[in-house]
Image (cartoon, rainbow, N blue to C red; front, top):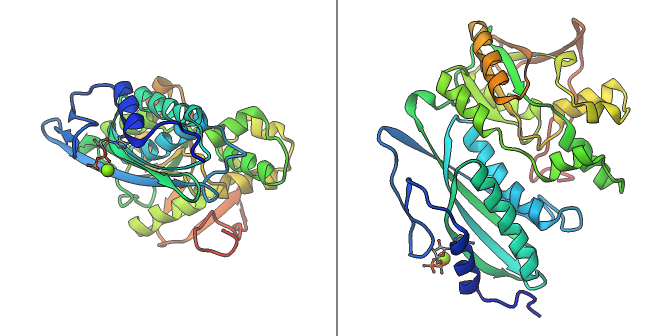
Length: 331
Ligand code: ADP
Ligand code: MG
């Protein structure tokens, strides 16, 4: 039985009525294609991420408002990681028969809220039924002048390694959900409704500060690994510098477990970047302006792919498990 009580075209019409206008989107929902007009001299940056029920989320752990917010945020996070200004999102959804119109409405509300907050608009998508779970596929488009775009390739030995915000919050919440415990509300919110660091990513890119940047979706060590491979360098991380939230510390786990989670826990959607020592003043100014801590957690070294961890100046072992991987045992 279908509980939606509306067809594909009614859903699209209602969504269209809720979409905002934008100077970049000349034509949004309603024709075979959207028509976009780039600001003169800017490049187009495009990214796609899927959220699949039972792989990326569980309906008994999330509500649809949060799911809508997260679906937009994880895509905006990729734009942030390259210094782009978000412009338009495309949303493809496969909807199973047991979803209600209220569920769907909440999902779109959350999605559109996050679009609005970053001044991007929903410009198209696809809507179909599903015989399995809920599937969501979002494509996000952003623009940036070439000089503001940051790739993974430019880290140099001697650069500082920086992270925004705090690490490990989302991973703790997920771990507690998986073991049947109710996570502290601040940490649960970080897991269900991560914030894309759009403003800080764009500010850093525009200022020409980062030599390389990535968003932390799979865990600090895993995502740092991508920068190291792309830039052919190594890294030393000082784990006692890792930024931990008061809510995470309040859980009372021992330091070893806390740092381990900050190093390997996924889905914080913070930005990780490298920058030369002379950029410190500009980094501090941007952190103050956007009201978000930016913490130096280590230094880029010469040996390609080599990561060392230190604690109070002494070497410590690398955690075996570096982050989530699809297709691996236990995924
Ligand atoms: P077509 O069959 O030509 O692909 P559709 O009927 O799928 O057209 O879509 C009609 C319009 O509605 C298009 O502009 C499409 O981008 C938009 N659209 C469909 N589903 C969604 C959705 N979930 N979110 C945003 N726009 C959508
Ligand atoms: Mg279509």
